[in-house]
Every structure is written in structure tokens, then in C-alpha cells.
Amino acid sequence: MGWLSLIAALVKLANLALGYASNNQLMDAGAAKAIATNLQGTLDAIDKANAARRSVDHSADGVRSDPDNRDGR
Image (cartoon, rainbow, N blue to C red; front, side):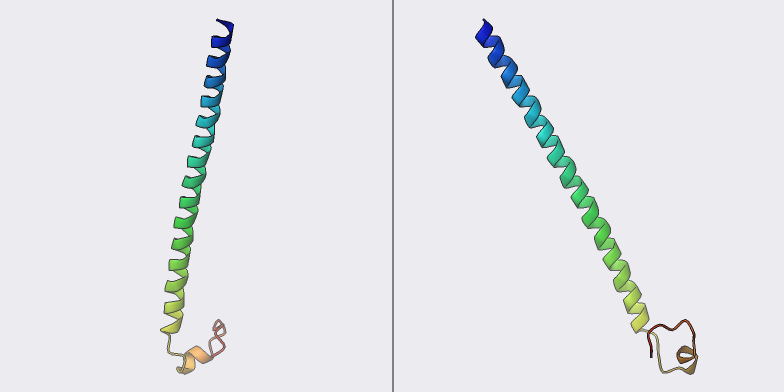
């Protein structure tokens, strides 16, 4: 009976270790997905801002004399 209980304990220990590793991997995957989603949202906001900047008519005198115009045009 001693060997059987030892083997059963080792199997339980291995099961706990694999369960922990699996949980850790799932949490890392979830974090990576959240980061990717947030980065995509940031890229979308940058694209929107760049589109707004491109849409400004820089030939107008008011834009060229604006002290906050950092486009240099």
C-alpha cells in the first residue's frame, strides 16, 4: 500500500502543477489579447487624428499665422 499511495500523491502533485501552468498560460493569453485590443484602439485614434490634420486647408492665412500650428506649413 505504501507504493500505491506514493504514486497517487505524485500523480496529484503533477496534476496540480499542470493545472497551475495551464491557468498561467490562459491568463497570459488574456493579457496579450487585452494589450492588442488597446493598441489597436490607440492606432485607430492616431489614424483619426492624422486624417483630421490632413483635412485642414493650410493655404488659409489664419492657419499659417496660428501660433499653435505645429505642422510648419
